[in-house]
Length: 123
Image 1 (cartoon, helix red, strand yellow):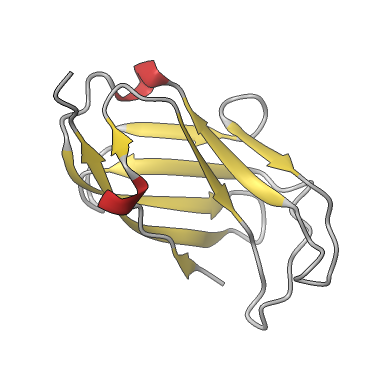
Image 2 (cartoon, rainbow, N blue to C red):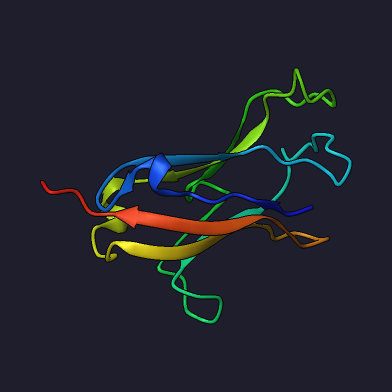
């Protein structure tokens, strides 16, 4: 089940800044899903038809699974964490973008998607 995960002005993501984005993955009933063995990809795009401006994958390329899995939503701490280094956004203009996290092994599915506001600092 895909969740809406907007990264807005309130999240204060700036060009040239380290950032981590954490996703708690749940099924349609809201029960946490064990994602420890999943292959995932995250992408930042200008629009759905454009090439990715930035992408990350599991397997040592920017997405890790952290925490302990528990079917109880209260005690589950497992999440997919996307790590973005400061240099990853240096050549991306500030503005409005879209992003998505996708499970890439079968059955493939979009886990989260939304809009992104990437800001420019005065310094």
